Length: 157
Image (tube, rainbow, N blue to C red; front, side):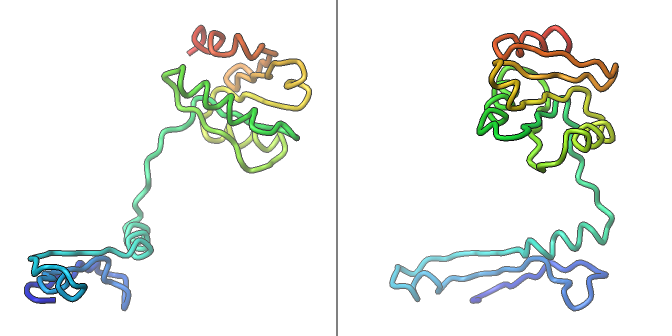
């Protein structure tokens, strides 16, 4: 450092209370063969920032998904492709389930998190060029052709 130095600390984190710091580094570029250049730099510790947020009981607000796409079995990238198509075409939050859970656990998780629709992309559906859509608000499900999927959602959202 060649001038002012600063530390950002958060009370209550004990010995790990510094979450960021920095200062003037006017000679740094010259040390690496460059011209004398006035400079200021800073850095933060991501892990310490997370610790500070957790200590403050900060909750990250993320919107609940409107639609959860679940790929079951050996469907390759079909689930990703389906989720991507829906994201591009709809004004809706679309998530893709990467957990590998059973369909009953996926449906339970979706219900607990306020998801209205679950799109099931399975091996059988891929052969039929369709998906199964379950509306968790009514508990009804139906098969929808892949070519009609966006239109199906446009009518319901």
